[in-house]
Image (cartoon, rainbow, N blue to C red):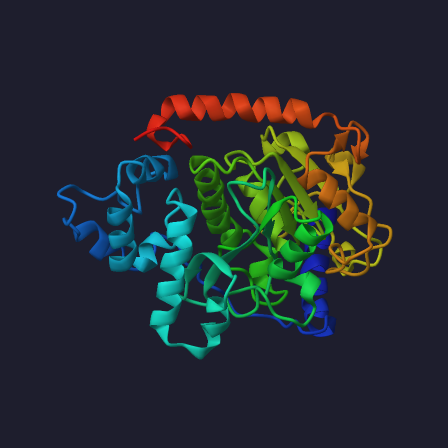
Length: 385
């Protein structure tokens, strides 16, 4: 009975905060955009190479990478020209081909809302205008910068808002750019808005349906990074994005999973996540998410607070962060710690120089990369075709 009362309190708080949190409101139910990218039917029907192209709905990113390794540069360019909406969203395809394909796809929409994405220097790794739209943008060089961080956002983020200038450190683009700058450009970062997020703080935000769909897409995205030789990223999971990361944890290819401003990860403890990744949590004392009781009952709520000591996550300092979207603000202790995590500079007692070590993590990644190369030899970076 007590737990049921707490669940009702949660629902009431959700409704109350929706009216009191600046810029947020109760949103209607969202339908997750899932399945292969637009244009997949034409891609499957393309016989120009004299053989079947990998099915975007069923081929793994490793199989896609292996396929691309057999193509000539001219064949790659022709597929990009003929099928930009597929190539631009095809995990396992070469990064350069995806950037080029998405530039073509965005320009082909003739939609002024997306014109900013074609500005010089922007690297759009995914672009899907269906629904509220999904997008991923890269800062740096995925295959050369050594370490990768992927920002997984929470509610109210979509194709039109992922890089909004208002509240920049509350957007995946602002977080990714801030992290790369704080790291002195020594890591590549990705602003990943690759799933349908909840709108406002409503029923969708209190349930896990959208997170389930997002977890599947996030898992495939990280597999694609490994398949092209970019390696395992550190995931920085904000708010509802931490629910996505929690559900993906068992399958996702990640070195670290960082939950911040989290309502829960659909797990009672780190062990319940079933992941080999290091799990971290941050929550500042002024974050309104603390007002939401951490319960999970009849599909409502997301479980234990990852920042609770009992959950078992490594704690990230956040004493100088402010509010729900201040964790990546310049000069905060949370941002400093995030840089250390992204670069693998981990002590046993927390982020910082004098690692746990980065050498151990690197050795593990090297071993795993060797296993991947053995299983999918054509996908191994640098191998002759």
